[in-house]
Image (tube, rainbow over all chains, first blue to last red; front, side):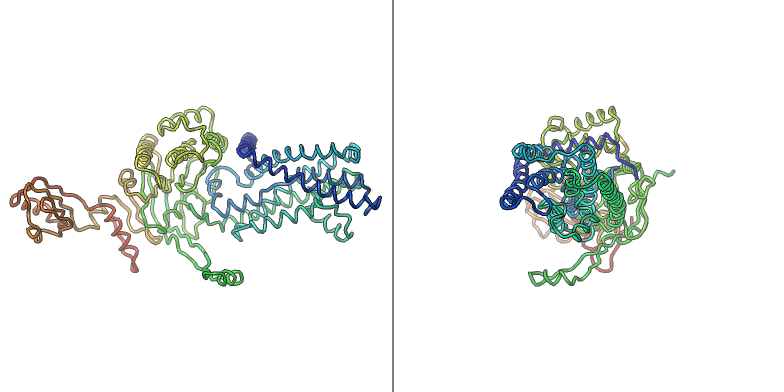
Length: 268
Length: 336
């Protein structure tokens, strides 16, 4: 498979930014949404820690740090590609990529990088403000843990895009992936640890989460950041998420090759 | 001399769809049980096109025109059969092949809707790896010819349909394709925009020797642009040849339009041919092809004729007749 030239990739990113800026009010309201989830979690945990000093191994300080850091990591690694891919297949918009010397999957990857970068920058502004408000409670990691957590998030970002594309490509078989995709976004948020730290539940559940890819986009790198995992454990986590990424490159390739033969290019 | 650019042999495409009963109950039932329906969109098509030819694809809705174009541009895999365009199998989607052809779909835009057309052009420049100089020259030439220089920084969603189609053409031609597929390029356009697009295509085809395959619902497009037409109906090719020849072959009459200096009674024409329109000073007759000259001569000598016009039948009527006859069971084919 031929990789897209870097110049084209950068042009795709620029193009996605220009498109995002067309709808300035949209950008604003999406960011309003970003602040709600961490804020609600902080309020709930404040209520919980009003009556106790420790909960499932977390103090108030580490729990609030968890909420803020996991919000940043999830914002860094998320994307909305499955909806777009599904719609482009369903509505026949895929046609315009199929007739050009460009790989659709790679185009979507660059485009998603562009879209996500911009959304993330905006989300970071919101979370930095929250971080400033709660600066007394925020945990400061040592350098190796900081670097390792960022590396895990970076790989998880790529893995997450591939996962979304694979789900979007299911549209070759079930035509509309909108319901599937909406369910996936919700489950993904929960299993990434975006609503609570996954280790407050049973060890069996936690084991399953360590095997599945979702927790590597939020929960796992946050545990590394908070120093709750050793350097060796963190390296093992990095290996797992990298293995998932490689596996998904293969999966997306296979699903694409099988799906494209079924494609009916409706509605020109 | 081997200058065949498009070669199609036994090309077939069968679509699978599902039948669903109407109403809520039908919808619920279809979740668990669906009846598959196979539709033969293209049933074994053969034709070839030489370099520089401009060929019109004619056929009623659902005839399979667009499906053929989709297979030739590599969007669809055929169910069976073979096709090569510029020597490549289109559905293998070889990048070298894709840099040498383009498809314009009248009802599907390749331009980014929210952005000025220029952004789409620049993206295509990178996708097709067009050198800076070629890009500048092509852009200048195309935007001048199509007269849209002043619209390049207007968001596409704010362009009129005609302006958008011109921008689509620019986007598709920047990489100077040798083969161009046009699917309904003038659909929904007003008369002057249709004319502008037509004139552009004629000139472009002539100057660049671009091979063009075009589908259109507008007969004017086909008459103005295509020396050769391929008529398809129900997925089969029913005619391949020149438009004039099809008219000659399929209609056994000519149209005589005669005006008079004085009123002439209707019954005077009844033995000469079929009266299609009549008023005392003008008549339109359908006359058997072989007799048209004699009938005209007879009228000129025996009636107070002001003017006589001998014409081929209206092309739209001929095509409608061909569609109707070839659409029936026990398909009739016209051979050129």
